[in-house]
Length: 120
Figure 1 (tube, rainbow, N blue to C red):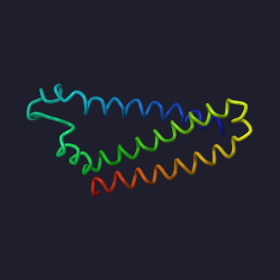
Figure 2: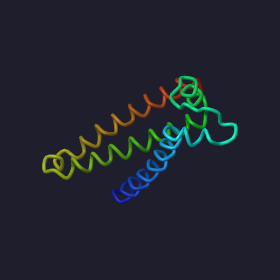
Figure 3: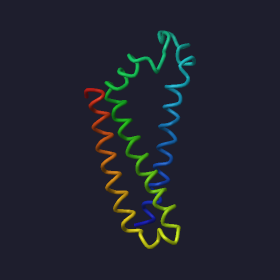
Figure 4: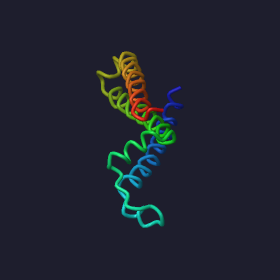
């Protein structure tokens, strides 16, 4: 089973990389985007743009996917770091249990906040 989680860890890293490239392009290359015909002057941090993305169902889905993969990647990586220590080996099951509880709570909270912010 641990082998499957390692594969998911690598996949989540790849998905996060792609999503972060998209984020960087959308948020930090507004000068490049504004060169296209009809794009106008785009400021991604203006309130109207932020709310527009929040109300867009596609962005909401991407935010939730990003949240899932970021939580999995982060907690699985941190668990592996902790388990490699002598003290962590003794407490592997409680560490995994605590990370599952925290991860599920953060996923529910993040999903609720994302959906509520967009009014979807």
